[in-house]
Image (cartoon, rainbow, N blue to C red):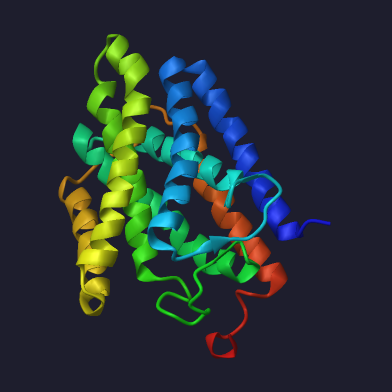
Length: 256
């Protein structure tokens, strides 16, 4: 019998995908391609990162693509899709919206990762007391650049109203996203000295936040589909409820 926490996590991810697919289907081929290439991107970035860094491994979910759960790739796609739906309704300059997208995704992971490793969804191999409740700080660097890179790559071509914008935005986002992920992984792991790595990560994420705030963005300038709410909400509420029921949220750090 599968672990109930694994099963429910997969179920929630596929429910979110159904919601995103319904929205994409109603809004044209470019959105469907964004969602599809987002899944491909999510799976490929995980496969590539595991082999590039050898820093973590996944537990066994019901549906796997080699050593990566399919639901992880689908989750990446849903998070990117919902984040872009929200940021596109803001007053931020077009090419600053990927910065907000990366920060919105990071908001999910600040709650998700610390609980997920206690369920065995994935394992960093560093115990449960290192850095951020067992999560390496470099993981938050990665989450930001994953979403930023795909979003930026998509937006480079998406403003074109011809066939280029319609058909090529998503595959170009896939290529730019992979290059961005592998490049930023290499920088933080192989270039930045371990002693200053947390400082570099902190400065980068704070700078991104200040850059967005400096533009004093206004939100909901057009109606925003509810998926922009439901994607982060369901991740957060799942982690909260599952964490409380299992007791992992209530265990003092010094007992880990």
